[in-house]
Length: 226
Image (cartoon, rainbow, N blue to C red; front, side):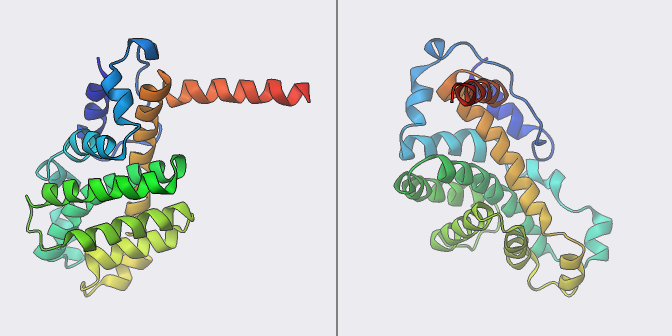
């Protein structure tokens, strides 16, 4: 099974990927498709890869199962417009999770170029909904989420989510105090961890768990030699 198949199954499962989800080990790096490795070295190719297997791996229709149920929508007075914004935001948060990982593990220029190429892909994906957002506005939202997460500012991340989805909801404060905004952080981190494992599969030929065990062991040996 290729890394494409593994990642697609992770993102098309019902709900957001769980943080401790482990992707099965792949064959040694030398046996993998060189195209996969090359894609992770180019901002443009990586954006296209993410567009196909992360953003496009789950349709907007699939994400209906993630929306607040009918009772919650009635209790919290969630309007059809807010419901539609919530639906679109799941795709935004998936890309944020990937973008956060890229920002932390690549030069700033690589991250900016990746965002340039990934934004229009996401925008086209969201056109399947009632999408009145511009690409510029979408990019600003992506970067704001990423910067908040990079700074470990979970409150800012939650506030961004609430403002983008429920700013005109009459029960906004009730929802904010109840921690509804933390959905964004949880969703972003879940996607981050799935992509991190995929990244290790492609670039190192092993899962993140296995890669970390090796690097931790090397670090212990190095410390013992000092």
